[in-house]
Length: 161
Image (cartoon, rainbow, N blue to C red; front, side):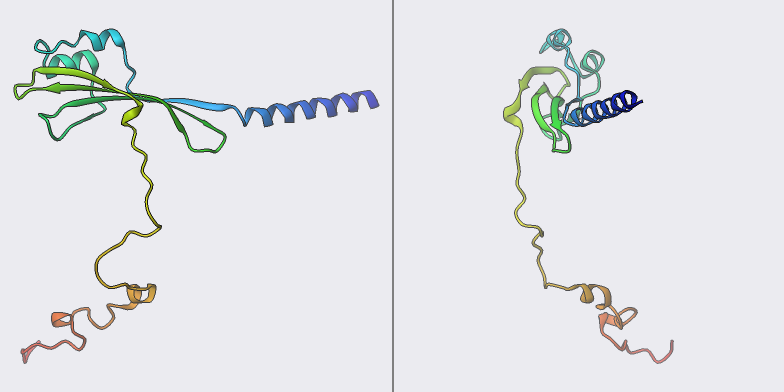
């Protein structure tokens, strides 16, 4: 009977070890467009237009508001370990440029160099105007609601309501 308990304890320990080790497995994920090199190479400047690019590559990840509405296809691979923030392993940005008539003028690719890392400064966003505390925000309008010109006590030159 003690051999059975020892085996049970050994099995429980191995199960706990397996669960603990699986928590440290890096997670890999893909976000965005799945790039097919043959399809991308089939887009020809001067030949294709917006409709043919849409049929070949599909809907873009986003479009530019400038430069005749260039289309961008973004593919990103990330990985993270346990509860850490994901880190970018690779990124490809495909830009399809169009002229005023909607004809493709060029196809270009970008990589990791286009990733911008920003660091916000401070915990508060600076604003113009006076600083107001919690109680000013909560109770600052008492007495001014419905008053003419925002002055307490009302005012105005009417004799009748």
